[in-house]
Length: 263
Image (cartoon, rainbow, N blue to C red; front, top):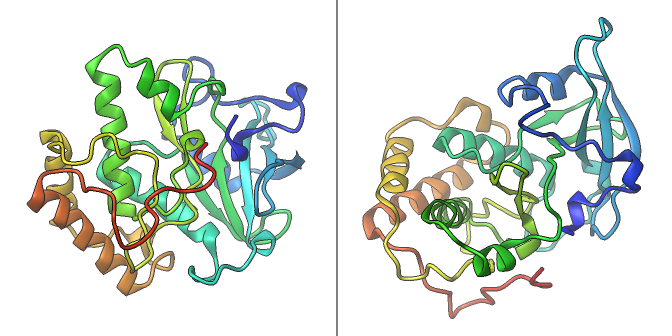
C-alpha cells in the first residue's frame, strides 16, 4: 500500500468512489469549505500526513469526505527543494486539470487547516495491492497503457522527482491516479521515476495535442502564488520539449533517474 494512502485503521476508511461519492467537479469546493477533523496520522510518510474528514454540511445533505492533509509545519526541510512542498501538491492538481488529464485527485490549499496551512487531497478508494509495476505486468488493453503514458507525460512536465510505483493507484472503476506530488516543479532537471518503460517511444497524439493547447495559453491563474515565475517558465519549456521531440525521454546519465524506495 502506498505510504500516503494507508489509513490508520480499516474502520476509518471511507475513500471516494465514483458510484457513490459526489461529482469530482464538486469536490474542490467541499474540501475548501468544510470543517476538517483529524482521524489519525498516516504512517510511513517522511512528513506529517493526516487522514482527515471533511465533515458533512449543516443540512446533512452530503456525506462526509475523507482526505489527505499535509500541513506546512509538518514538512522536513530539504536541501534541494524550496520550502512549502504542500503548495506543489496543489500545483500538481492544477496542472493535471489544466491539461485535461485528471490524473491527480482533487487537491486544494487550506490556510485554516487543523495544523495551519497545507494541502488537502481527496482520499480515493483504490486497490492497494496494485501499483505501477503490477499494473504494467497485468496490462490487458490499450486504454490502460495509454493512461500510464499520460501519467508518464505528466511527470515529465511537472518534473516529478519522486514517482514511486506505489504513487500510481487504480480505483474500483479502473481509473488511474497519481498521488504524492510534493517533489515537483523544480527549475533544475530532477526527474526521478519508475516509469521508464516508454522511454524513446512516441508520445500519443492526443497527449501532444493537449500539451500544445496548454502551452498556447497563459499560466493558469490558480498556479499564481504556488510556483515562482522561473518554475512556471521551466514547466512550459518541458511541455514544449515533449511536443517538439514527440517521444518520451530516456533516463538521465547526470543524476539518479530512479526514486528510492522504488515502491
